Image (cartoon, rainbow, N blue to C red; front, side, top):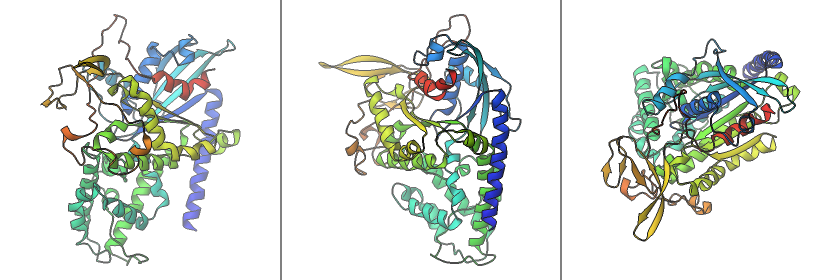
Length: 489
């Protein structure tokens, strides 16, 4: 009854918030656009490029309202939520264009408001407020915990950690776990060690050699001001099936802290931010999974299925808008398309579509619009044909990041190179057929992998004397047309 009553109270809070948002939206049409993605997917770059292109009139031929000249202006407005940090757009533009560095990864939630003045197709003038909410994708993977007990989460986490390549990364944690008796008296020091080793295991899984995606609890890798708190000091235990936790035991202590994590971290995020989103972009670094190996690709598939299960999706109606808003458009975007020749862009898109197909089916049945696109919010390379004997290879030119390895040497971050990235497979059945589908960094040396996609610096841009130069992109305009084009008619 307690749990049921709590759910009723939470739903009442969400409905009250929805009514307030509806009233504000009636007089000031607004879209709350969530932008998320797992580590290194390019969330900060995507938002920066989107705002930069809209506010300076970028080259977006597929974005109809801008290409036709109906958008008169797009201006930043003061941050609307007093408790949410502002997305540091100006600094990120400077980092990209002047310093030619990629901005730091998203580690917390932030928000930015953009007001778009446009002419409707009937000739009347209107404004649309676009509130962009940036948050780590790892936080999404925590939402399923709301429906799981500590015992369920422990069993699932341990089962996952006993599969390769995770098992060898979990050896130190597993060794400590074997010394713990769940029914023993609660022990702060043993708990601290278990939490530290469990976090080290999660951190190892995220390394680029393995590129695992399914890594809840998300705050263990980005604790912020909760670092060292009891709410982040717990770990799975090897529990007896059907057992009961004794009072004052290690088991009871771990379960209490797991529940505190949900109360202090997961529920506030869901209530205050996630449940208020209208539309969503999920950015996916598919190429990192190819670098790591087939296990990373399967793990990505499971993570994305879990992410989409979190959304309350469906066609928005007056009733749902009033009492429980739904996300009616979701865009899955395979980022870093500029790391491939354009002849492989459709293949990258097809692979991501295959990865999310099971998750997308449910959303489409509910009436939500779903799209999948391969894009580069900021294009860091250009294309060329490189002569190799009698054959010309479709290649890309760019400046790899310092420390990248290519052609037998470690690069300095200042030298432009031409590289043939290889062709992505066209037979997706073979790609997803088993763990031996291709060789990646998790099982092979760097020079023996089937795919190796380098990381490049942002491009060197030439200014035109009228402000920051335009940021080159691939299909960012198509993303915008899908996400907000219908609201600018």
